Image (cartoon, rainbow, N blue to C red; front, side):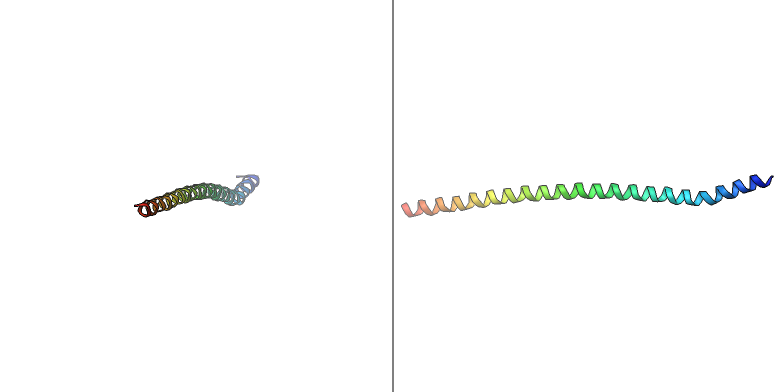
Amino acid sequence: MSSSDTESKTVDKATSPESANADVSAAVEDLLNTLSNKFASVSSEIFAKMDEMSRRLDKLESALVESKNQDAGSSKSQ
């Protein structure tokens, strides 16, 4: 082997860990972005479902109050 072959192998070994670190960093960043997007999506869905539940409860409450008022009005007229 010539000295240039030995030097190129040394350079490959030196850049290989840096390349591996860059690959791991890129994979971790991609994973974090994916998790962040999924979290935002789930959070949005939860808030939408809570808003819908709130509207349904308000509607139910109004119906109960109206029913109670009708029952009170019909019992007074009897």
